[in-house]
Length: 145
Image (cartoon, rainbow, N blue to C red; front, side, top):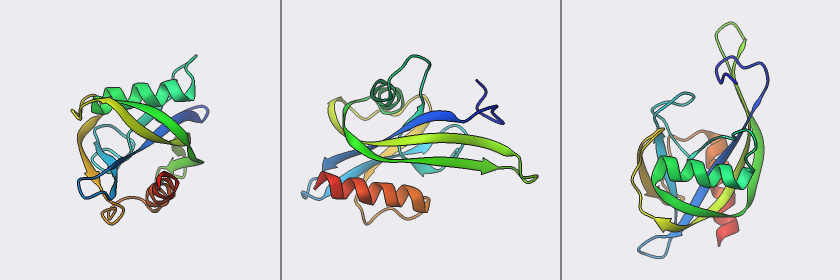
């Protein structure tokens, strides 16, 4: 299925990976995207669900591919649509996304695949993210407390 100008929405998953920082404050992992949509922007790890793959398996695979981290899902944070249109109003991208609260159970941070770099941030360091991403992160941080 083509991702740009698709014939139907694409199912995708995102990971809000939360850990305790050095000072005990909760941190979330952000990645700088290496592919469209959002190429070059900071966001949550994630990607498209493959045929025959469960949502949980998809998020674990995507996180491992992008960050080198092994995660387990804790709970669903939020489900939503992300629709991007071109200048003519045609749908360029349409994802139905499910974001999961996740925790690290193995591996070490080493970005690869679709992520250019990764960084751990606190809830006070979310500037530059889309308002929806900030909303999802804040909700997940509340769930993780």
